[in-house]
Structures are given as C-alpha cells and as structure tokens.
Length: 260
Image (tube, rainbow, N blue to C red; front, side, top):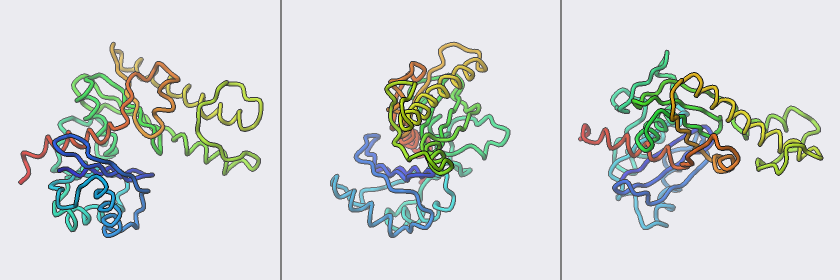
C-alpha cells in the first residue's frame, strides 16, 4: 500500500492507495515544527477509521514545498511505516519529463507532479490551473515536458490582504457573487474577489494560448477552490481536485522498478 504525502504552504495532505485505488485521504495544517510522532498519532487514528494500520503501508512518496517540514515527514515514514520515501525533486527520482526552465530546480514539486498527472491522463498541450495558497498556471507541451508557468496571489491571500490593509473593510468569505455591481461594501468585495479572479483566469489563459501558438490546448483546474470557479467560466475545461495525488501515484509507479 502506498502512502502519498503532499505538503504545501497551507495544508499537508496524506492519502492511502492500494493498487492505484484511493482508500482514504486526510489533511492537516502545515507546520514546520510538527514532529513525526504528532503526525503518527493523528494519522494512525484516521487510518483505523478505514480499517488500515501503519503496517499495511509498504512504500511512500512525498511532494513538498516547505523544506523545513521534510525531515520530520521522512522520519514519520521510516519510524512508523518502515519505508524510505521517494521525494519529488531529489536527483534519484525520475519524473519522466523534462523541466524546460532556466533554473529547473526552482520548479515547485507540486507543480511538476501536476504536470505529470495531467499529461498522463489528458494528453497535451495543456495548462493546469491550481487554486492553492497561490494561484498557479503550469504549461505542459504535447510531449509532456514542463515548459513554464505563472504564479499569482491566491484567492484567500487577496481576501486577507484587503482585510489587513484596509481599516474599514471586513473579512469576507470567498464565494460566488450573484452580480458584478455590488450594492454594499460586502457585495462589492465579493464581486471584486470572485469576478476579479475569473477575469484573471480568462485573461491569462488567453495570453498563454496565444504564446503557445497551437490548437487544442486543454485547461485543467485543481486545488481547493477550483470547484468554486469551474462553473463560472468556459476557459476551465476539466475539473480534477485529486490531480496532485494521482501524479504522486504515477511517479511512484515509474520509479518502483528501480527501487529495492
């Protein structure tokens, strides 16, 4: 059984897979000071709810963008699951794609994992829009190679910035605005955040497709807030909330034969 771990800036997600089938998945807030023992107590109780125990895990893979948390996650895998995890981005892990950046090592692990998963499932060329702590656009060519991307402030970051920086503006929930023109402060803020991001999505995708100069570009939406925006623009064609975890499973499969 495979334990897949995706640690991003906001949450650390764990998922169990048995022959590619997801058994369960759970999230905990990402905290660099969290110990392997804390992870183990929390995770073992949740695994028990789906009838699994730590001894069922035979392998693990990690994608992480918070380097300070990596050590304890490795300890978790070794101490409690008795396996040495693959870590996306380390030299001995083959992604099966080329990273065509000026500095390939700068590419976030989760973004490369998304590229692997999306091309494997949907073909290319394509754009992956990931609604996470930041809103990222990752571009993959027809061969499956990662050719570049865009990083924009995440939706929740923008909401927090409005609340913190403007004394008279309240904190609002991120939700779809029924109309563009707000009739009060809260409506105006909700419209600016929601329809502003729809405009950002559509504008950037149009410019990306213009630069790619090719037909049939697929656009895949993933991340926590993807369902909120998916139905409000035809620029997002495929909704796949589990894209990153599917990518981790695929990368593990590609590397399994080379591992003892």
